[in-house]
Amino acid sequence: MTIKINLKNYTKLFTNRAASDICKVELIIHQLDISSNGRQCDTDYVELPDKSRLCGKVPFQKRVYRYSPSSDYLIIQFISDDYNERGMIGFWIEVKQVRHSCDHKTTQNGI
Image 1 (cartoon, rainbow, N blue to C red):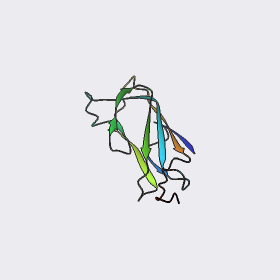
Image 2: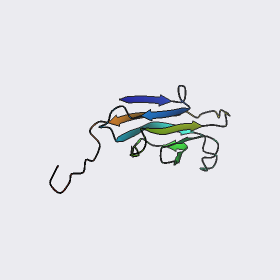
Image 3: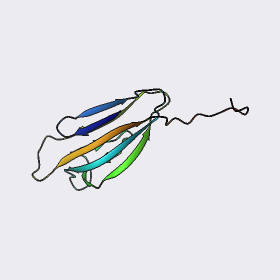
Image 4: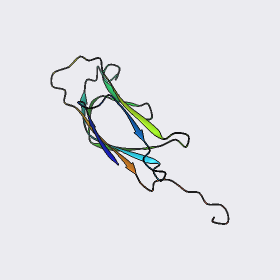
């Protein structure tokens, strides 16, 4: 399952695990250009599942996150002070759930 999110259709996203063989989510940050307020990321930012924040101009990158064994969702959210600065493009992030991404441990007997 792939979800494309951008500034127009998104404030908070819960990525629900779509199948039991999905344990990882790949975030593809195609574009991110939002207010940075001196790189503090305290007024406008995208908060990732690990609670890290992205703001300012961020180059193309991929990040991988794991679902917790006790949870079937990850949260990504956009926080803003609602002040629109001219020249800021916004963001485009793609979220892909990775099938067959769970590490299956075997016992000593291989079962």
